[in-house]
Structures are given as structure tokens and as C-alpha cells.
Length: 258
Image (tube, rainbow, N blue to C red; front, side, top):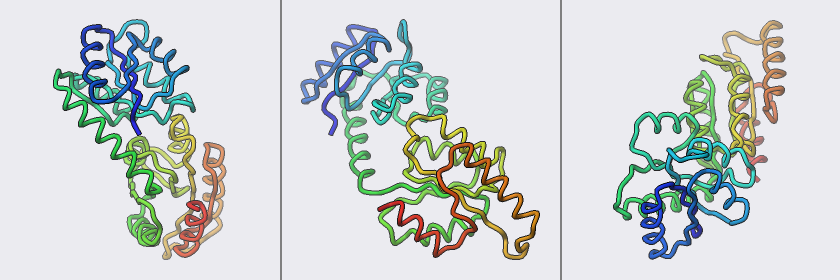
């Protein structure tokens, strides 16, 4: 439940106006003139939502966002970035930000955004989110079909960019990846990149291997899988479940969700 809000805004008149309007709606608002002040408040107060401007003195919104997401104590706090500049949106989107708000004096727009975040958080608690990925669309379809009976939200991803963007936006509980995945990056490179984001630290990364039936399993293929499995493990994957098998896959994922 969103109750306590931290507002990082260096313009005092704007901060006072937003604080007054939000508190009139029942929220408790802490204000900070820059990122450094915001971090001090976060260290001593329980905050449910952060609203921050981008351009601020001493510590701007970019550095504040990164500091919040790197800390295990604050990484799950939703953040609304207030900006009307496209270049700022692109920069924040690359960091995984999904909540933006254009600067406006209309408090109802902000209230609607807060209500949306609250609704999304409530719905997310009902489902476990599983990101399934790989180069073979038919395998992902089999995975999605197998997982239908579980109380989970299944999100497929087919490319390296799609895996990263969906993982950062959706924040899945489990990420499933082919150890032989190849795109603009390999599986172990993707895993290493995902582990750089603190808020994905609790996500389980499960790897598997897929061999097209017409290729069989030869010595060279087995060695390739072993090498890829080792690299994925070193990069931060949690478990390798072997060659893809629909029945075993469902059994393994079900055990992780209980």
C-alpha cells in the first residue's frame, strides 16, 4: 500500500505545491532538494514510492535512481521519473525505468500514475512471473503450454535485446534460458548483464539445452553444452536442468514456485 512518498525536487515552490496536493489526498510526503538529501531520508524513513526530477544539484535523478536500485533495502521501491525530455526518457529506459511523468501542474495525472503503480503491484503479487527465452519458437510454445496449469504469468523473449528489456521492465521471479542461446550476445553474456542489476538479484536463472531432433546428440554438441553450461554458471545462473523435456521442465519449475 502506497502511503509514504519521497519527492525529490529542487524547485521549492513546485515541491511545496505537489506535497500539499498529495497530502490533501491522504499521502504523507517527504521532500528533498537533491539526491543526497533523498538518500538520507531513505536511510531513516519507510518509503513506498519515490517521485524524482532529473536535473538537480549535488546528485541528480539518474544517480539517485541507480543508488536506490543498487541497495537491497530500497531496490523494490517504485520510482516515477518526472521529465518531458525524450533523451532523458531514453537514458532511464535503458536502466529499466518504466514509470515516467511529464511535468505538469495537473495533480490528477500524478494521482492516476500512483493508482496505476499500486494496482500493478497488487496484481503482481498474485502471480509468479516467468521469463522464458531461446532461439526456438516451438520450444517456447511448449514451455508456455506446460506452464498454463501453474498460477504464473509467462513472458516469452526471442532475442538478446528482448530478454534484457523484458527482464528489466517485468522483473521476473524466474528466467529460463537456453545455454546455447545466440544472438548479438551469448547466454552467459546475457546472464552477466542481468546480474549487474541489483533488483534482479532475487530472480532465479535456470538454464537448459535444446538439440533439434534431426541433429541428434554428438560428442561435439555435448562438449559445446558443457562449455556453455560452465560459462553460464560462472556468470551467475542458478541451475542447469539439462536437455529440454516438457514433463521434467514442468516438474522443475513447479518445485521452484512452491
